[in-house]
Amino acid sequence: MSVLLSELKDGVLTLTLNRPEAINAFNTAMLQSLAQAMREAAENQDVRVVVIRGAGRGFCSGQDLREFEGKSISYKAHLKNYAGAIAGIATLDKPVIAAIHGAAAGAGLSLALACDLRLAASDAVLTTGFSRIALIPDAGMSYHLPRIVGQAKAFELMALSPRLNAEQALELGLVNRVVGIESFAEEVEKLALELAQGPTRAFGLIKQALRKSATSSLEEMLEVEAELQDLAGQSQDHKEGIAAFYEKRAPRFIGR
Ligand code: T3D
Image 1 (cartoon, rainbow, N blue to C red):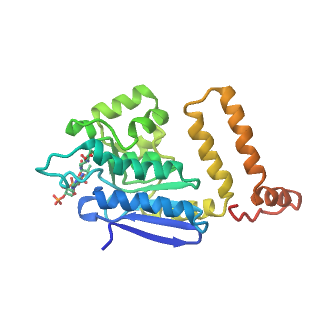
Image 2 (image 1 turned 45 degrees about the vertical axis):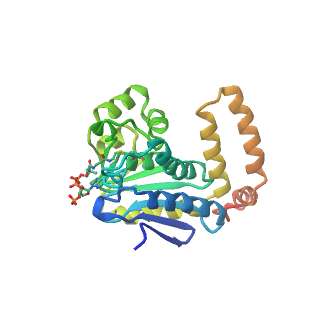
Image 3 (image 1 turned 180 degrees about the vertical axis):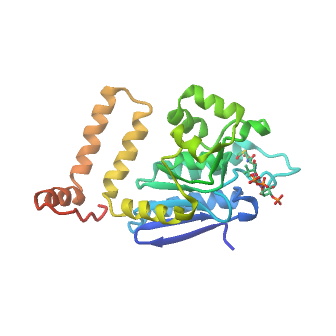
């Protein structure tokens, strides 16, 4: 059975981390499959949104702590596998949703933070985890977490590694919404379909603008916005959006 399951339906590519016996802990094969899936999602125009979820009772428990048991490894080399997957998500010009139920720990939380939207089921438990095994946050957590919760809270979460329930995560802005576990799959699908029918090109450009804004001045962003708006303005979806406005109807976006 593959460690990453993939299904494309109605513009929604659902990727399921599939090592439920270890709460979907990452091994090298899973990381490489995830990076490859992102490359393919970028190329495939039928993919309008990506959902990442976990099989079994949780989202992802981070690095498989058994993968390198008794071996001395180069973290520097191994983390290249994480970089491929995390950068693939962040730079994909399409929305990526993390559907978090159960545990999201260590690099499993890093993965969720790299996504554009996080939906948490009411049973979700989020924890940075790294400091509990005397490591520092990786897989992009030290980039994403302070940008979401601020420096001081990020240090607290990284150093003390509390286990946050879904409501606490929502309060901190770590997740966008909390949904009852019984309707979780349905709500994830609803959001994914809404995004899949949206202006994909504009969504991709929004992602680019937000990434640039993390390291730019206002003056630089005014220029970036002008450049990206030129691209959005040339899309077929922009023409359709304007036509729909004049005709007082809902737009039918094609994602280009
Ligand atoms: O390059 C590098 O290697 C560095 C990169 C590091 C990145 C990282 O992600 S470091 C952080 C690694 N993750 C952790 O430290 C989290 C470890 N797991 C936990 O803290 C807890 O398991 C959870 C909070 C995720 C869930 O707790 P709970 O009580 O719901 O489940 P459990 O009973 O602890 O776990 C269930 C099974 O999954 C259990 O196996 P068993 O005993 O039934 O055979 C457990 O060992 C296994 N499991 C959970 N997490 C991992 C794991 N197996 C391997 N690796 C794991 N990370």
